[in-house]
Amino acid sequence: MTILGVSLLVASNAQAQKSFFNPEVPDIVQYEVTPDVKYGEGKVNANGKVAMKDLTMDVYYPKAESSEPRPAVILTYGGSFHRGNPRSPYTGFGGQTTSMSQYAMRYAAEGFVVFTINYRVAPDNPIVDEYSGYTEDDIDVSIFTNPAAVAQTNVIRQQMGLEPLTDENAEPVLKATVLAAAEDLRTAIHHVKAENKTYNINPDKIALGGFSAGAVTSINVAYGMQEDVSAVFINSGFVAGLKVANKIAASDSNPPIMMFMSDNDYPVVSMFTQPLIQIFKANNVEYHFNWVPGFGHFYPGGAVTLSDEGDKAPLIERTLGFLKEKLQ
Image (tube, rainbow, N blue to C red; front, side, top):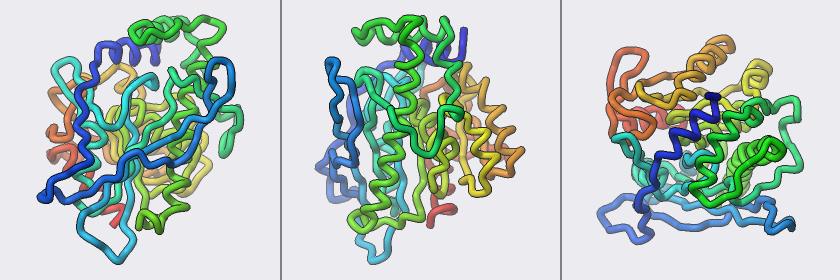
């Protein structure tokens, strides 16, 4: 079983749960939200024709007013690059994730402006025909071409009512999907920086965060595309699509990263976390690794985590401390 195959096979057992999103928040809650803000467009293949899909996000603001620009966080949800949204969590194997919207509520209440993005996924048939900031040599297609990976991807596609991938189209479909997610996150970064006064954010204080496929995407953008961000935090992320090692080695401005992995996580996550840490070590990138004991791939923000320094704290509290240190 290959990297992507293992990931997608286990992911096929996950179920998306009811959305926790509510645009009408009680007065006691210390955040406000503006839903469905357009941050850009992305090319898709719509019945054989090129079309543009609107890319949207929900924006969470601290309720307390501030005359100073605030630090920002951009969150990217998971879902095997095939499904999902920022408003709903997943359950599986005795655990449940905290949705990106739930994280955003807490972060906004703590003084951050938070953007939870939607992005193009496989059913959109995304088109990526122009590279910017990376080249074909920066892409690793091996994960998209293995027969076992294609077979396991088709498990999810069958559940979703999609046509199965074949040896002929697996590479372009999966390659375009992973790259499109990264392109869309990068578009979101460029948008919020350009509109920093609209959102009252500091364009030099932006962090990326994500779960699973969203974590992969955050890694690809921060390190593979070398977008200028201040920090990264990932729940169960790994390297797929872009050769981040080459880009990290060639740069002297890689952002610090906080990493989380459960002790019963997907094999793909545990298999590639250690090599990623070695890349960070070799290039003097600041990293903070944390275990999430007692869970599989799906775990909540309130789960107790154990750091490589021996202390323990709830995941969301650890990420908040990291964000405040790096952004405020």
